[in-house]
Amino acid sequence: MRRLYIASFTYMVAGVLSGLFYREFTKLNDFPEGQSTQLGLAHTHLLTLGFIVLLIVLVLEKQFTLSRSKMFGWFFWLYNAGVVLTSAMLIWHGILTVLGQESSKMIAGIAGTGHILLTAAMVLLFLALGRALTHARVQADASAEPALAPAS
Image (cartoon, one colour):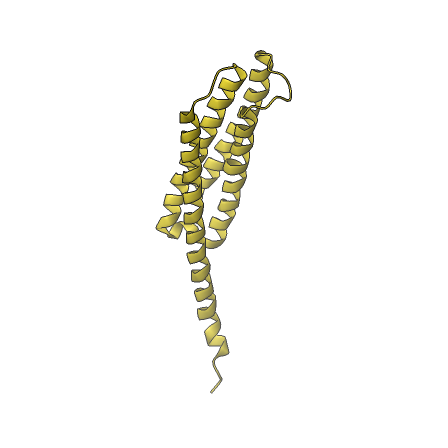
């Protein structure tokens, strides 16, 4: 649980700092206000996918002990790799846009890889959650059985 807490907190800080960078970098380079850049998307990706989603996963871990499943470890590392890779490419692309430089297909490809990692991680999370729910139901049924037994 501590890893989830630290990761979520780290993404919160990174998300806030990326928003500050977005605002100041565009001002510093006289980038027209309201014109589209992916720097703002990096800000929201870090805050939503990093901070908020991992806080929700922390609550699920507390409730269902998802970390009992090996899939949860895979989820954690794939998910973080996906968030970092995707956000880094958004920042890189956004900086190029603000500086008036062309982006390359390589950036889009790497960002796509980040999204693939995020998707795979979410599948693993739901598989781990499904197993945890089944385990919780079996335990609840087992603890309820003695109460249903007829009295002799």
